[in-house]
Image (cartoon, rainbow, N blue to C red):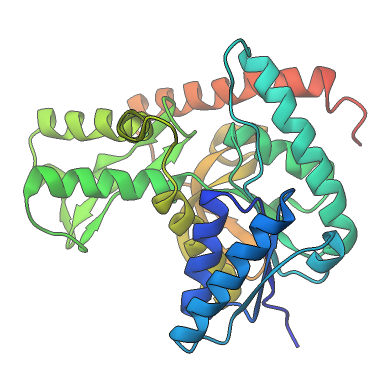
Length: 317
């Protein structure tokens, strides 16, 4: 029997939304929550199991007592990470979260050596690279979540501009998460109609800029936290594609080994998701401006990766 067990490391807001989404759909027979605060994980797992019973889903959510409970998972989602605190440099945060990623991945690979890893921890592309190198897994089985989220945000902002088309908008965003994302308006449509036929260039530019700053906009409203509904659901969509072996194409952070002209780096690109993870990287045609934006995105990730390779990953074979 092929396992459809899913484990989620980090039972905070994002991890909880992933688990809840999967439980409501009945996609996994068993969903494991791994968290340093075991009681918190137990409380959330029990509450979600009750919710699953309410909708007559066969999914059972459990809290892990140890990583042994992760054994045999088909997919492991890693949301665990350290938030940036006052006085911390970018490098401080990079190393702190790389250490957390190393600890998590070393334990996961012992009990779930055939799992697909989905990384949600920030800085996303660098953490996906770290997870890949530490795990030693094939490149297709370590992927990061960002592109689905950014594309969803862009789609909503397109709707706000138009005032119609909700549910029919398909937006496309590649590149890194945040300031270095690369929205692709020419691959964005409303019920198949090109975006350029519906919005002016000025309106499209406004959508693109708001998409880049969407996370910060939400933080500004929440004051004490960041987005979690859309990131959690976006991650669950990836898990669903893998469990169903749907072969659907989604933008994800994936390891590039020559695609788009880059090697040994992780960045957001369209991939075909199936039971083996990112089974194929899809290379779309980029115009000179988009190529330059993508180059900058890769460069930003490479800066962090170079730091990690020099001081943190230097002994990883």
